[in-house]
Structures are given as structure tokens and as C-alpha cells.
Length: 317
View 1 (cartoon, rainbow, N blue to C red):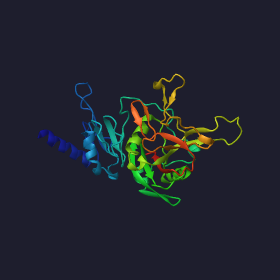
View 2 (view 1 turned 180 degrees about the vertical axis):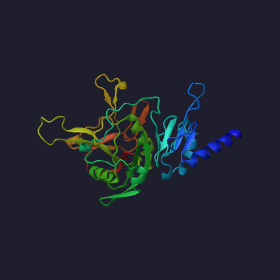
View 3 (view 1 turned 60 degrees about the vertical axis):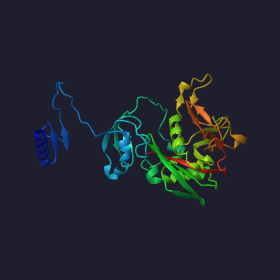
View 4 (view 1 turned 45 degrees about the vertical axis):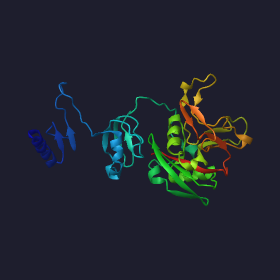
């Protein structure tokens, strides 16, 4: 009781000055916590609310834009994750940005190396939004040249969010999908690591629509349309200019593996006209690597393929 009364007195004194000091009579900011001892005889610090991942997920609806900046310590990974908790991949401190939780510093015991994670607007053709998300910028439906595509799902992973669209029986060209993604503030999705592809395939392409439909992604063929001395030409790469993960663990005897999930023998630039990449319908081809089997492998087709009715959009938030 004495300690509680003392705390009330201290807080009352602090609030009268519009600043609160703990273990200090001269707080310099709104809340100033000074150590009780500096001789190593006591543990010092501040502990944020500690919650399991599932406890935090259960409170999803309670966190809104008004709670931007909230900090918690998550003691375990939620299972299953939600859109808001998708970035919680290890115990640690997380902050809420008004739509999803983000880790504060290193949260993982493993290190993923990426050659490049910076979008090159000279390759992409524009500067994508750095505030748009799948939650606030991907509409439920979008009409493209008279074809209506319906959003089949959204998902967040590693600080980015994604939206998948399917249009049923009507075809959508690669360029139309590219422009639709641009208008949303995102871009056709790029998958520079195996983990990113596995997460998006598992959480977005599991929708029934993609059992039978193809979807455009942001991998395309580029050409100088000039003399043969300009090489490599043509060149297929991610439209953001990002490099794929270079996987030295594969131990290839002829080359170092670049992360990809192309179907066997693809891309093959059939007839010299293919070069725009799709995800194939479920089980049209499978590929197993690192203990994971992809059932929506990739293939290159012509940009105006009438058989492609879906696309995946990626956002930087």
C-alpha cells in the first residue's frame, strides 16, 4: 500500500509539471526514467507489455490508426498469423504503424542476405507509393479494358503487402496488369527470395480461383531492339531491378543458383516471342527445392496471352 501511495504521489507531482520523472526530480521529457542504481546491484530498464503472438492476434480489432506507435514485447510467434501480425516471425519488440506490426531491430536468429532490395524506377518505369498498402489501396474489384477482376485475398510479409486478383474467363494482358498495379501505387509482384515466394503462394494462390487460372507477376523480357553488339539481349529480369537471392547453399557444380520457381524447361522464349512471366494453375507443374514443393510454378508467355486472367500486386508497405 505504501508503494502504491508513493507512486500516486510521484505521478501526481509529475503531471502537475506536464512531465513525469521516475527516480529523478527533474524530468527532461514527457516520461524520464532514470536508473535506481548504477552499481550493478539491481536490474535496470523498462519492460513493455508482454504478450504471446496469439494474444496479440486476438486483439486485432482493438488496434486502429489511433494506436500508431504502440510498442509491445511478443513472446512467441502467432499461429496462425493475421494481416496485422504477419510480420511477427520471432520473439521481440514490435511497434504498430496503424495497420500492421513491425519488428524493432533484428527479430530472427537467422540472416537472409539479399543482393538488392532497392527499386530502380528507371527499370520499373515509375516511382511506386511508399504509403500504399494492400489493405488501403487494393480495391475489391478493378475494371481493366472492360474486364472486371476481383480481389481474391491480401497478405503481408516482411514489411510488404500483396493483393491477388482474378477475372474469371476474360483475359488480361501483361501491360494492363502492369498499369493496374501502377494505379494502385504498387507493382506486379517480384519474388527475390525462396521464402517470399513460398509465403505468397501459400497465403494468396491457395484461393480456389488459382486452381485453374494463371496470374501475371513482375518478371519480364527486356531488349535494346538494336544491334547484336548490345548484350545480353534479350534479358529477362524482375521489373523492379532487384536481384534475386544468389543461393550458394545449392552447391551447383556448373553455376550458383539464382532463386526462382520456373517450371521444368522454362523460361524458353518459345518462338522468340515469349518473355512475360505467369504463375501456372495449380499442379500444372511442380518444383521442389529446400523441402518445399511449389504447385504454381512459373512460365513465360507472350504479353497478350488470352489465357491469363489474374495478377499479383506488391506494395512497399
